[in-house]
Length: 525
Ligand code: KIV
Ligand code: ZN
Image (cartoon, rainbow, N blue to C red; front, side, top):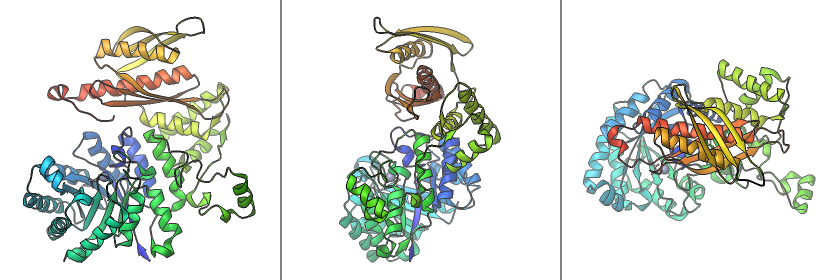
């Protein structure tokens, strides 16, 4: 059996998904779960892009010791040095250097000749080798790169010290047959190819990322780059769970296996979905809610006689935990800790105590508490902004609503050491409260925030359920800021989520240097 390496890039390419930003502690929690899942390499971030990414890679390198921890870098010295420094204390480290090689990218983006690109790639790989013997090289937009030029640049990178060459289908343009041909060509034409592992990195713009990754494996690729839930730039990357389960189920066909503990897949998927705020679509292969549900009578009948009639994978094989455990008032810290652990959350003592207190408090108010609520409390604690970051705090909220008049809201916020009052009206109490909050933020602190997304979820069906609210604000420059909160009161949960989003926006504005304040800087916070 060939052993296929699983390179997980949820924390790097996955985090580039619109709307999927994660803070440092969330990234560490996910990295620990990826370790448990058994991935071979964790691409933990792009250290040069932000202080947050640098810190996350550094902390993951310190705390996650078994897998190889990888940092992404362009061929620039400062990128490679940042990756090298962030990875300093890793047990096993890799620097992933990339430069674009398609004619379109070289001409329009890099404004470099092919020879300059090769020379730059060589310099980048050599510099990365000063920090580690494990260097990956990617010719970006490879699936639209001239095949002979791809071979030249890969040969040069291997000569310079690259130990993995990765073939990215950056824009999700390729189809399986082309990928197979490209990998075969690379293996045939690059004389030193046996000194490197060949890797594949596919995007899902045509919905072919998994098929293309498997085609590459058939042609001789030994590493597959993928993400949990298929997160990633635009339409996402190849989904780890789909790639892994295809190899697992059809290992005799592929004569290949991975090191993944498939029973950790469901937990990892839910953890990533909870922390990024990006829901898994119900009918998603392997991890969607419907993946193991049977609706049609004929299917149900078949499954009752023998599951294999309509199921190729058992729910247990991926560690699916469908049932909702209701946590009682007297459940105590131990049950809560077990619940969190089984869902991949390793909280410290203080955080655990805080979750327990919040569960008790909600139970005291006769709330029905489910496993999802406990997870939401944990997320709330993990995403809590530091005291310094809480530039705005909610002091008071009152709303008036009814069927005979316009809903209105009054909000009192603490802005620094001042208390500021704002009012608003809207089509409902949440809308009215949003307007009140937006007007205070704009008047007092500058950002003009527009509510782009608002969602509310109550796990149990009853009116005693806890409300989970999530929002997304956008500022005038297109930056977007998310906020989440859980509360027994629907309106309070909504407003607390908005206050968190507003704080993220104000902190972002504060961190910008004076020159950046005039420039367009888009991104997700
Ligand atoms: O899609 C891409 O080309 C990438 C590279 C950095 C590998 O993500
Ligand atoms: Zn990518």
